[in-house]
Amino acid sequence: MAQKPKLYYFNGRGKMESIRWLLGAAGVEFDEEFLETKEQYNKLIEDGSLLFQQVPMVEMDGMKIVQSRAILNYIAAKYNLYGKDIKDRLFIDMYVEGATDLMLAVIPLPFQQGDAKAKQIDLIKNRAVNRYFPVYEKALEGQDFLVGKQLSIADVQLLEAILMVEEVHNDVLSHFPRLQAFKTRTSEIPTIKKFLQPGSKRKPIPDEKYVATVNKILYS
Image (tube, rainbow, N blue to C red; front, side, top):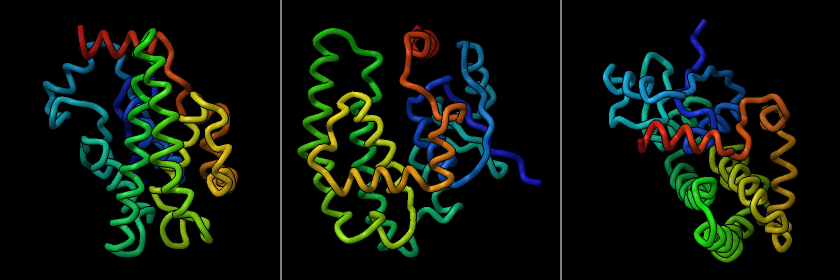
């Protein structure tokens, strides 16, 4: 029996959350080792486990894989979530990068305060409504999935991005009926529905403890 993938990261979302989402959508169980001290982090570096001295890192199939996009692409290809051919993968990659750009605008929020945080919140809505969501709304015309006729990493990351933005602006989909239907439809896919249930390995909105741990390990 093959070993479960093992994820090395902080006990929170960050750049690992999309990896958790994708494994969840693929129906793959995984273990996690949470980094809570600088000593843990330094040991991974000293052991040569982190190619570029950065997490996330995923240990699977006898490899220690780093760099978020490399990890995600490997999982997507392994579990048939990466389209049927090179043209599909091209469009999947474009849609994924758009969703990632939007999520990267949300990820820093717990680390920001005051005016900087308020400006970032406004920026998120502006980009979602005017730059990113119109693209996905158009792409979903007459079809259930962004690319082809089956679930791909692009759909998984779009749903993750939608839910992240809705945590900041709960009315953000009000002018996007196809995205509303997409959200409902994909949330009912059994593996995704399971991942969205309480008690799953999906992480909550980062709290002060998560922020303090990341700052202590990476910046102290």
